[in-house]
Image 1 (cartoon, helix red, strand yellow):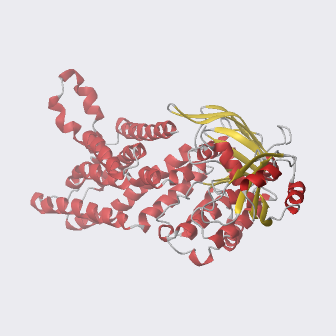
Image 2 (spheres, chains in turn green, blue):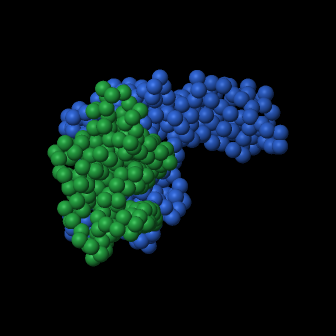
Image 3 (cartoon, chains in turn green, purple):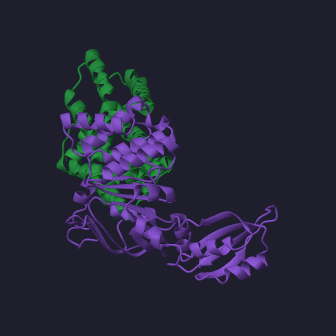
Length: 234
Length: 319
């Protein structure tokens, strides 16, 4: 555990020392801010629903871009060899890198807290769904970061890692909108696979153990997948 | 060589296949505490693969590795704790500052506050990193990068230091420095270094293991290997005023000489002769007596030095 904290702090430092962090955060804020406020005054309602509705699709692009370097860069430079010969276990490495990705996204979400504060000044804002929305956003970020980490462990090429990660996250996001393509008997299972419906439940302020379990399962599958890939690499 | 229990590293039947390619082929090796072992071999002989298996980066296809009392399949983490490893060409994190990087390694190696500061100061002194502590690793030259890598490997003051081509990319002054450091560490610690620079082995190692095509072809102390190696004893003779036929007939009478060859090149005005003598015999006195009786002028008379280079070439040349 101590070791994963060292790796976590190293990865976080890497993020915030390089300009990538600031570029990604800026893009994320511009995109979400513009989409949210461009329609906000048309609806004329003091709520954040529009912001949270857009979050899964923006995350599907932004998070793989954040996580793509976690393993690919090490594999490409060769520092992977150094990492594996330090007294750290695979679990320490994966956990440290995963948490770095999640914390980075939390940092990117932090400035968006100014939106609900602005909105609450304009009208009566119901804070319940907002708090739920941010909790859901963290869970969603964790799930996508685990997928992105897995994609990054597959290849030494960061662009390939980004594309693989985006494709998986994007499918999970859009699956709920594509349900009419699937045969009826499978609908129950497939709609459960979609990330956005689970996220929307939490963002409405309804905290259901099934939704939380879903996100935790995706995190587990992503991290376990990375673990398997690391073992296979030997 | 001591018995199995007291050795630092004990390797048995170590084999590694990359798909069908056999990179390391049933290697047995025992390394004692305080030994500096040079792993020598041509490119692609399996040096790096062997070292990677010792450090736990690659799992062996078969065979056992024991470091102190730990085996690699059961106590991998314990083994990693007592090994400091510098991979080939020191692939460090390019975006980090030297100071941050060493600090990170110290944290991972479990060094505490005061100990960490002291150790980092010592290593900066030892490896000459003082002026580059606040530079980006990606901007360093190859030699400086290598020195940071060396500091990284020595961070936890490990009992075993494994260095894969530690002096590649260094300038001659730095090489001498690094060798000095290695020798100093080797007094108390076990050092394994791989190289294809022969003079390096002669200068630093107590013991040489030569591997070729994944097999150990020689394993002896540097001194003993130089003594035993070289299957024949070669003496070069340079004469003026002499014809080859005459010299040949006179010299063939000398006891201990096997073959007599003329090695003249066109420009040379002297008669150059290469005498190959039976090993364990030294006919130099007899040859000198023989030459003294004639009116030849002796301008060259030397025994070919048996260098590690000749031994290496003999052992690793294509069949």
